[in-house]
Image: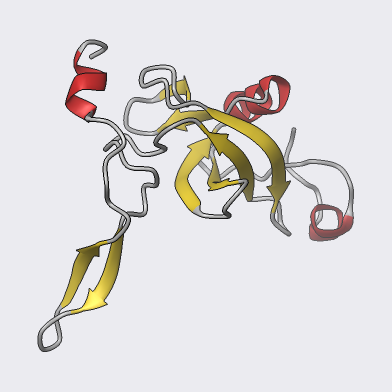
Length: 145
């Protein structure tokens, strides 16, 4: 998994040559394989990408903790990868997953539980949508923190 030499190779070739950014990361969008709902956006380094392909479990790289992590290792909310795709220039990946429980660390099914809406006047605000919690993060992460 090394960077592509030409845009033609990346866009039309069959070699998987992800383009990592200056931090060594590629953006990953995870969607529910059954519904198509966007569950989360995270980042993968080369090792996370390799482990995801090899194991079928979603692995990510945490920019804040500067550490590799397997989705669900703390919460039990595992993502099983059914399909992985890359975009045209191979600088992002999309994984279709079977999500066990909630994808979001807040206990919600998706990390995208707020809609951006036009507020009073020229203001912009957030509105909760599909925001029911599937688990209480204080209970799940307290014992493991």
